Amino acid sequence: MTIASIAPTHVRSRFAQIVGICAIVLFVMLSVAASLEKAHYQPARIIPSAAPSLVETVSDHAEEGSHSGSNMSVADISLLQVQFLDFLNGESKLNQSQVFGGSLDKDFNADKNWRALYAITKELPRQPYERTDFVAMAVRSRAHYIAYRVLYETSENDFHRLAQASGEADTSAFRNSLNLIVSELEKLLYPWLQPTAESVFQLRRSIEKGSTGIVITCGNNYFYVTQHLILSLRTVFNISLPVQVYYGGAIDLSPGRIEVLKAMDNVEVIDLHTAAFPSETTIASGWSMKAWALLATRFETVLFMDADITFLRNPLEILKSSLFNTNRHVFHHDRKLWHMGSYPGIQLIKDMNPHLSNYGKQRLFVQSDRIRGTTNEMESGFIPMDKGNTGVFFSLLLATKMNAKVERDEVLYKKVHGDKESFWFSSETLRVPYGFLHDFSGSIGVEHQEKSNENYMVICDGKPLHLNEQREPFWFHAGSVLQGWYRSAQPPNYHGFSELRDMVFHYEYKDNEELWDAGISCIRQKRWQTAKVNDEQQALIEKYKDMFRHDIKAII
Image 1 (cartoon, one colour):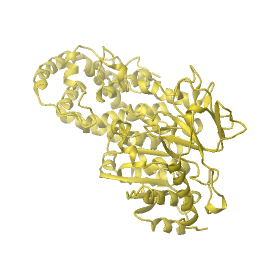
Image 2 (cartoon, one colour):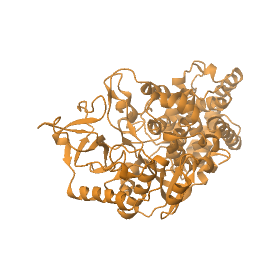
Image 3 (cartoon, helix red, strand yellow):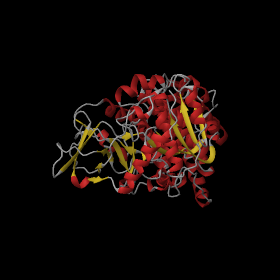
Image 4 (tube, one colour):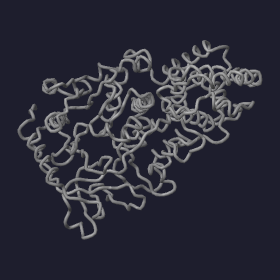
């Protein structure tokens, strides 16, 4: 695919005219640069204070010419985009081994990059676009994100500089052009925003500044574990934060159960079908509900929790972690399920991102063409995020699009297991810094005596266990403390409780051997990566069981 399929002839002609007057524009730009370098510069919130300004970079690399668009492939266009995003994120050209993105080289010229990128971006809204084309989605979503950041979050000096590099008559014309680009790309990519919000900018303004809250999705099959999760947050950890429980219409959660949840302290129960984005949420269900609920909530800092997760430590600890404070969202690994050969999700993320970030290249998920990789990178049962951060918000916006009806049914869910990879796929695509906690999911359950030996512990039919930043047991999921994975509208006493006495960890070391059997019901691990549930943890588990026995309201 070439630029000819993206930009029509009249645009290429206009682009050539811009190149032709570069010498004149460049002379003016260099004259202005001297005065701008003396001006007081305050970087926008999204750009770290360590980021070089456009003025400094352009004056260091002021040379004539621009990228030729006549033979640019999608990979070439993507490179222009990720380089500009890495630049906006503050990455210098001197420490590429230490940065998240790592696309900048010694020849990077912000002026030339933007000139070519801007010409391409203006034409993208007018080009044919199919919702099932995730490569086209990636190019357009990056273009939208870049235009939004330039429009709303660059300093006055940098905006003026970019306006000059763009070839527009003045900053007013440049601002009008960016407004049109943002508006047209939003209609193309996110038509479902309306009637909830007229624009992404308006949707962001609807977020309750400074607020923190918990979001849970719940249907009839998760009614009892949802009650249990909220009670545990209130009584075990004394968390009084507001809770929003989202469900998908009357068929998803019965009226009597809605009333029980509403009666709980500081809990809102919200029908996602009528609350926001009705053209899509009315046909959302199952896994896809997570992203839609996260986008719909008014909370700025959100802790999304699957209904059936159980905490061994206070979940608010995650908001004090270095990973959250650095990136403003935190991802957890799923089980490391080894895979040899072709796996469609791997090619999907590579097609969307022909230039993976430094961090993305290290994900085992993308490495199976070189070594055996893992088919599951992310577990989405617990996601803390700061929607007030522009990058985090846009990452969520793109993840939500991937979970729209056409995108999920025709592409995403055919290539990966449900929603969970969409969250880091979107961050990688938009070059939004993200990070996973160290370790893959382990297991909590009972040691299988016949399969274990002096060197290895085996746990079968356990519950996936996740560690915190300090590698302490943090939370597990799959039916809370109830027997099995518990997906049932029947009261908990129909099912009984799991025995949870032993723990297997899965530290992220490159020499890890395959741990899970073919049926993924048993995990086998070296003894040094195992532990017994201690007395404090066991007492907490027994308290959770008592909650099910005595405090949960049963409604058939």
